[in-house]
Image 1 (cartoon, rainbow, N blue to C red):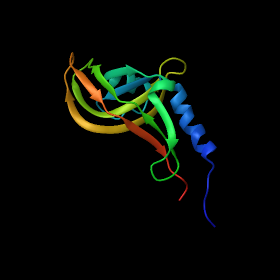
Image 2: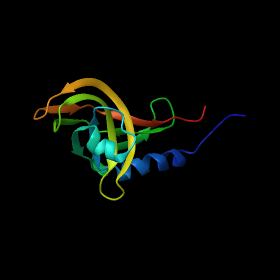
Image 3: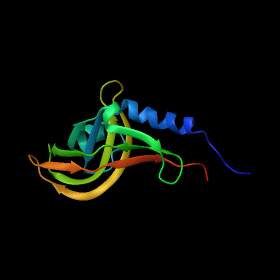
Image 4: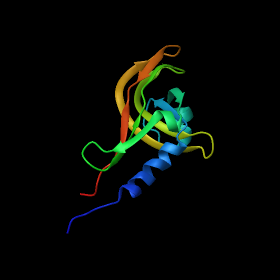
Length: 126
């Protein structure tokens, strides 16, 4: 018997993150809490907007995804080596929503960093 899931179920999970994420933060290590993302490991951050910075669509090979818009010339607040990107909700719940890895890069306070486009994808059941 084949496995199947409705797109609506996958969209609900994606929409939870997409509708709440109001900051994208470049981090020096993998945060496991909101405080680690916004304080302990934070190197740079940028404000995000649901209707302009996240685009939902079919996944690359199945399932569903949202694409996170690129952000250029983001001010670096603290020096360190970028290793992770976090999406957080600062406005309502103080919640760490999603973490991914990024290309390791040394950042220097006072400079800027470009964050390329990236995806959050939920695959069809296998």
